[in-house]
Image (cartoon, rainbow, N blue to C red):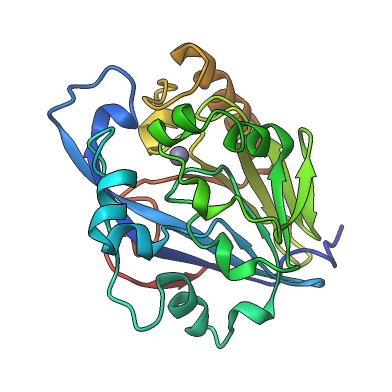
Length: 272
Ligand SMILES: [Zn+2]
């Protein structure tokens, strides 16, 4: 059983970090314990071209003092950290593989928090951007609620974005499946990546359905969620574990400082 149309190459990037209370990732932990977690981005090549999963921070909202105060300093005690870059963290990252924004055929966004949607602006004007319908509706809804929960509407409220709205599980690209995992946000999604080749191999990217390996190892609730009870976030954790087990693929948590390759360096890691 070959997977002739699977993902040919995959790169995991760390496009920033955030220093935050561990209680944001693991419900009920002592909020005085702080972690530095990597901000993930995945680049992969399919038969239909190069795709990105998530886009990191918008550097402008961090570097401009007034915008920082509005979007990053008021809530949650999360301190964003940018890598050193020449042009832009996202653009620098894909440049390392010899690509520019125009070479990206499609983008999928796990959810619209500011550490995942900050690079959408590079792909406005036609590039298909996959999102769950519920996530986009939430993000374009009550602005006070969204902004107080870490959404920066300027990152994604752009009429020229070519949104492809999914409703539940679906397909993003050849070899890339979307798995609907609401809880962290109302329309969060995770991804299953199937690699090209004869052997069955691939990865499951949880993104913020579970930040840390202990969320999955111990099946403990995440600390950041919208409109659900903490225990409901464990349902998504269990669902992703079942999927990774059924394929025998490694499950990659969203922001784990030890599991995310190159998490402590501004590095890419080629995985396939
Ligand atoms: Zn998030």
